[in-house]
Length: 189
Image (cartoon, rainbow, N blue to C red; front, side, top):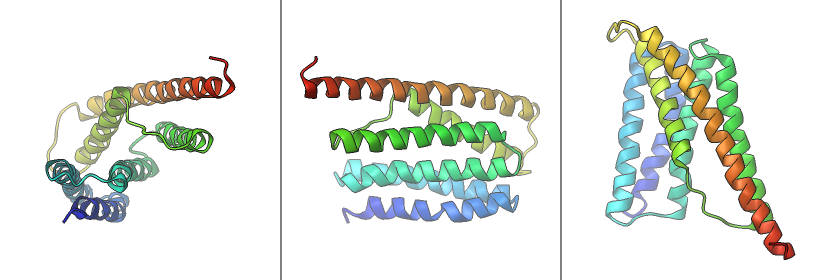
């Protein structure tokens, strides 16, 4: 049973393909349902891991990977359709690429480390999720909401800001850590 959270996370990763297919087919209401399933599964696997002490190193890697994969693929699909500006999609992808490559370089240079997301990164992820859900909801036909375009425009601006600020913050913090560790190794503290 202690593998159950990881199994749920793997199932969430498998949801990425049908979500993207639904988005590309402009079946937004159905995509919203799968987003809801993914959200519930994310909460459930986290609850099970914490409540029953079933946390694992694999789970700590798979869970954020599943979330990021779903979010990035949704951005790509919505960008492809012109529902999210292509330059914003590019900046979101570039930020994630810089973080992954930076983490890999840090790991190769200094060994294993524990990386936890900053509050800026969590705020950025929340804003990205809100943007994707708002865009998908706006095109789902489930409910007509006045001023939805204004809300989407505001969320796009917020995602621009939080993506750039959180990406810069990661570069600053991890660059300083790398510099400190390099100085410690050479005895130049």
